[in-house]
Image 1: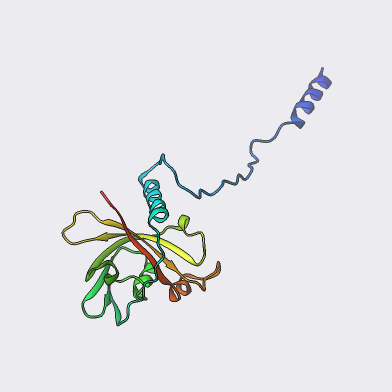
Image 2: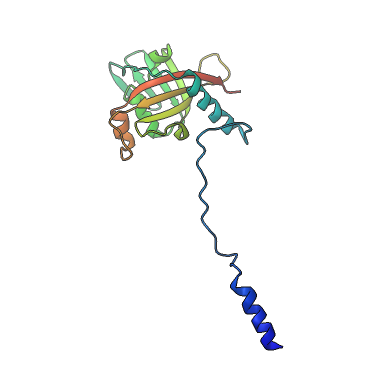
Length: 180
């Protein structure tokens, strides 16, 4: 009887896989967002994606010509214009310090900008980086989302952030939706 039990155990155990061994599962990166959405962030990513699909027209904006200075959280463009940066990752300050995006481009003298983020899912080319930010206007309760694109024709996969910004130009900027 012991021999019979031993044969049964060996027979059934040889075809069994351990549950503790995990297999790495590769998931495909989402290239296009579609409804339904799990949260507001996915909805806003979709809106950004659609804005680029429907409104994108590449244009070459010139850098700010003149003196650019920085004081605390403000970037000054000449003597009158400035952008106040509200809790923005310090890496993104370079975009403004290099004069790529400045108040004249958005037909303003002063701007308050927050929540700058790179939209990596829309930036498949190492020469192009796409972003969104919130623009706070005086006497307007809610911020407006803006989308913009920077292009650096000399960039590649190994180009670091500072080098990318050094040779970048603003190639697209567009107002989006209101944050409620």
